[in-house]
Image 1 (cartoon, rainbow, N blue to C red):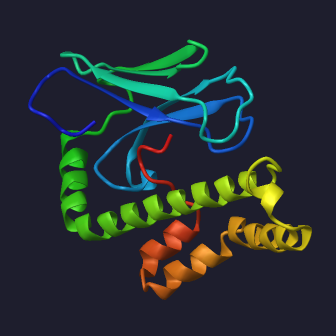
Image 2: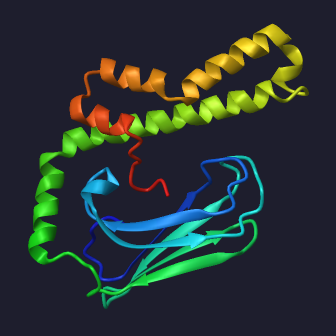
Image 3: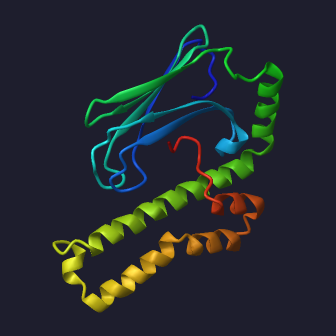
Length: 197
């Protein structure tokens, strides 16, 4: 949730699974202003279990952040398909940052705003690319869709290409080519953006 003048805030966002037939998602709650979670403060973690088998990206997990006037944060994850939900409550005095630490983090966020924006864009591009790769893989394996229109030699060639892409080598090399420096190295090291579950 962004910083706001209001004492009470509520925000919801839809997330999904990262792998086929993923039965559980882990929700980690951070406070901070930076794009990468490792530059922020972990407040709590919990799991939503019992997600029915489904293709990657199909389950709809609604995560709601509700902050009350006393500074107590409740984070709830709801599987929209089954109605199952789990939550964590984080009090204002449990593992929270001091005002000095908050001021430092806000100053760091301002100082690294351009780098963080570049990292955010690269992470979004990487996630979009991964979604494309998994979608293509699914279509190639579906004989009623693209798979029925592609010969076996072409399927083998595409499968080989997909294995190469899934390994991340191509994307890591492209990030290095962009001259992203340390940020590119962190992205290539499988850092995930805040807000991607």
